[in-house]
Image (cartoon, rainbow, N blue to C red; front, side, top):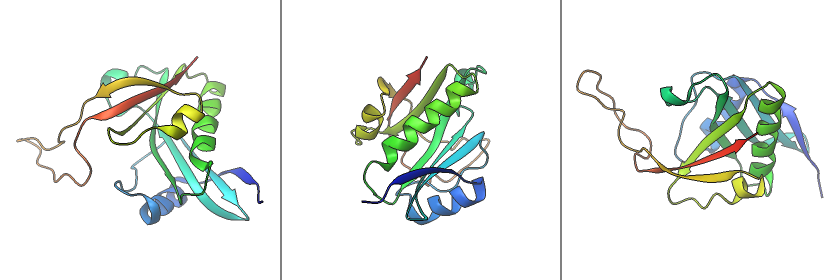
Length: 148
């Protein structure tokens, strides 16, 4: 069995992996950092961590996993969630959050030691003064956290 290896990855490389493999989201605009998991020299998953999308959560102590994407290789998602939290803690963050679709069980998050907080938000980004086309699921999401 091949070993899963954590490795650095640029945002451009992570976004390309996301473009090829993510089920319902596209690339991200920016990030604090990204981490990949490789197996036999091939990237099999990426995590992108940035500032919280919700302004009220952007307190300087909280970061957000804005994308996590794998090619369905077993254990990659939980390895990335755990690595992202270790990196955040090492940088002084007190909390790392992420959201999943309401329909997703969050098995990888639980395996990585994260806690389910509850349902959050949902809805469209489209506004009268700033029209947008929703290209992502707009239903309620599950909020998860890993905290010190």
